[in-house]
Length: 136
Image: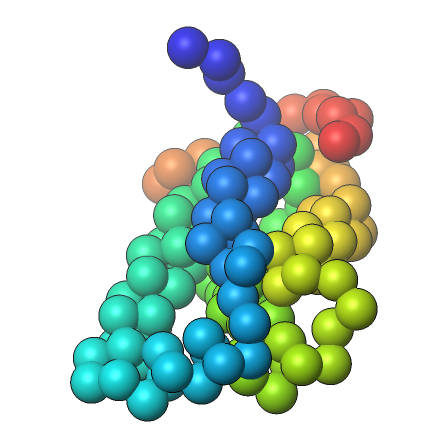
């Protein structure tokens, strides 16, 4: 089994999750929003993505891979990309697939996160000192 640094794990996880929106068309997106339970299913899936992404971001902060950020906010932004780009009005305006759009923005955000400083946090929230100059 391959082991990933937290940010790379987020990238791999969300690239795979974005496959779910790879063939979304405006008609499919409208139909999904119109059927009973469709929006709720989509929301539940997105909430799961947010939770997993937030946990991985927490580990990245704890290990000093990235500087301290509000991991809940960043997780919601990252995990919601596929959903955002598969909205009916958005799909119709894209020049690439919803997956490709989400993947591109995912890389921009992950590459733009502030890199770890010498100060991190352990699982209990206590401050730790460490050096990590890892880049994706």
